[in-house]
Every structure is written in structure tokens, then in C-alpha cells.
Amino acid sequence: MKKFMLFITLFLFVFIIACSDDDKIQDTFHLNIIVPNGSPALSQTHFQYTQPNIENATYDIQIVAGADPLIAAFGSGSHEIIYAPTNLGAKLIDTGVPYVFAATINWGNFYLASKTPISSMGDLEGKEIIAFGENATPDILLRTLISEYHYNDAPTIRIPYNDSVQTSLGDLVSNNEAIVLLAEPVLSVAQQNLGDLYVINLQEAWEDMTGLASYPQAGIFVRNDIPKTIINDYLSAIENGINFLNENPSIIAGYAVDLDYGFPLPVLLNAIPRSNIAFTSAQKSRESLESYFTYILALQGNLINNKLPEDDFYYLP
Image 1: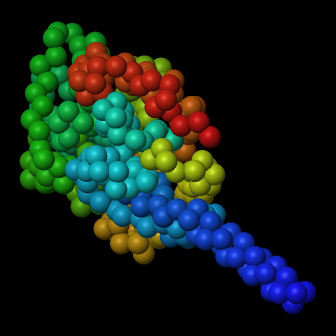
Image 2: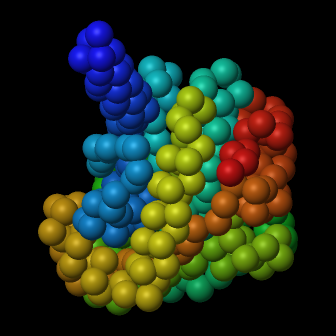
Image 3: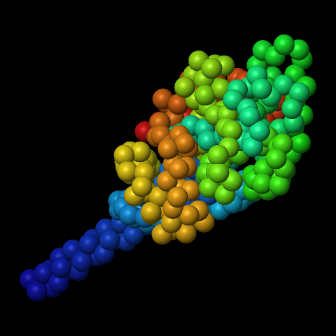
């Protein structure tokens, strides 16, 4: 009888241990992370390269081009973490996709470039600016600045659109009179290939217009079924990586080359300091984001469904 009771006790002990192990396995989340190439990718390069441990989580990182894969990811819920323009995330979350805004990682990387002299928004009156991203972040920023700038007469600036920033770069190469809207790292590609260019920093123009240092261009969106402990650990790792980037841009540039982002080392060394990469939590970004979105509402409100985000848009750790 004693042997039988001992057997039962051992059996129950092993069973409990096994169940506990099963629970641990079930509690492990796999994070599919999607990031557009360019400044958003650079913001998480340290994380992608060093592969830090996130407790109770594994992850894969997908670097993509353009907004279409991001829209598909929001719509399908295929990715637990999405890096995206803040206005795109706000519009899609308002339609009911199960994500929240967790942090800003990019505070503006847009510039006007030309082979002919330009130095300020005032120099653009009567000119043509070749842009990209119609009705998206770059277009919103450019048209807001033009509409708010105090020109002598009604602005007569013409804005034809290309399908991509790379096409705009081609126009700058082929047309000595062109003024084009570019984003980093493509601006640095242009300067490497064409030499000295005349450049207007649109982030500085935004600060002159609004009094705010910059605008929350792109951020991290997380699916709302992920445990907060995992989200918090991930965000902490990204914040640490961004701090490392700003202290060691040359090391991050080397990591980006090794990860095959498609930009040569000299371009990245020039682009990183001008990409305005900084980590700011959702709550601390809120004032700047609402100011930015207020301008969008005045310009073309349907881009964010004609409303500012509600409280539940913002992630609370």
C-alpha cells in the first residue's frame, strides 16, 4: 500500500510538472514584426542585429517597401507589431483593427532638394515641386507647410506626383531645374551621386510654423492581445537600441549594411543623423501627435477619418 501511495504521489508530481511546462509553452508568444525600409528600419537596426532576448517571446522581422504591406498587415492581423506612419495607423485603428499606438520612433525625415538655389519656403512661390506619396505623410507635410506659409500672394506652387521617392530621385538627376521632395536615406543617395545640392529641411520649416520641434511621423503599433510584459520588454529594447544609434551612428550604419537594407555605408553615415530617430512613448507623444493631426484635419480630414484618436488609441504600459 505504501509503495502504491508513493507511486501515486510521484505520478501526480510529474503530471503537475508536465502541466506547468505545457502552460509555459502556451504562454510563449511569437511576434511577427513588419517594418518599412528607411528610417523606421534604422530605428530597430540594433534590435534586429543583436537579437536580444524577450522573455516568453520569439520573433521574426520583415523589412518591406512601401505602405501596401503595412495596410495588409493591419487588415489581416498577420503581424503582432507594425511600424507605420502615425496617420495611417490612426485611420485604420478607427475602423476597428485591433492595434494600439505604442511609441513614436521617427520625428521627420523629409527634405526638398534641388540643383538650383533654394533656401527657404519663401523661395518656392511660383515653382513646381515634384512630390511622392500623394495623400500620405510626405504630401500632408508639404501641403500643410505651403498652405500655412505667408506668401505675398495666393501660393501658385504646382505639385505633380510620382509613384515613389526613387522616381523623384530620377527627376532630380535628369532635370537641372527640378525641385523634388525626398526622404532620408534617399536624400543622402542623391548627394552622394550628384554632389552638393540645395536643401530645405522641412522639419525646421515645421518648427518655424508651429513652434513644435517636429512631428511624430512614424511609430510602433502593437496588436492588443499581446501581454503587456512582452510589449514593455520589446519597447524597452527598442528604446535602448535607439539610444545606442544616436550615440554610435557609425556602428548602426555598419549593422544596416550587414543586414542588407540596400544602402551603402557612406549614405547611411550621412542619413542617420538627419533621420530624426528618437523613441518617445505614446503618452508622451500625444500632444505633438494631436497638434500634427489638427493640421491634417484642416487640410484633408478624411486621412484620419475626420477626428482625433480616442484615449484607447494610446498604449498604457
